[in-house]
View 1: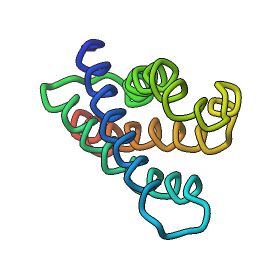
View 2: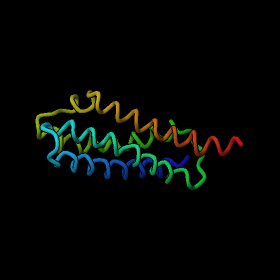
View 3: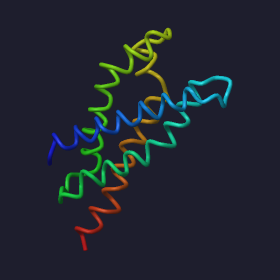
View 4: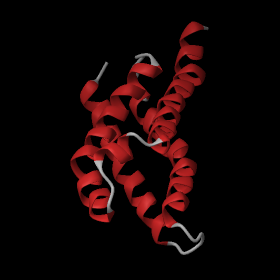
Length: 130
């Protein structure tokens, strides 16, 4: 297991994810921009995470997908705690509790881990059991 590579990929996913969230937030489509941005993020996250898993596993890693997903998610959540919440949530009246306690956060986190697990299941485990 290459923890550094998994953390680095989690950071890349976070950077692109926060950028996507911000873009979706700024596009005037729905009356309330926050749910709009979360819907956009839910759509973008599977593509980001699938490609992140592809990057991680291309060097021959065999680490279980849930473990890899948890490590990548930990990097992203840590950056949320250090940067996203203080810079994008608290100035608009939110808090750490409102961010990390929201169903949106946990659904996206489950989606994150689930996509890495699915990639591992379909591309890594299947190949190595044949």
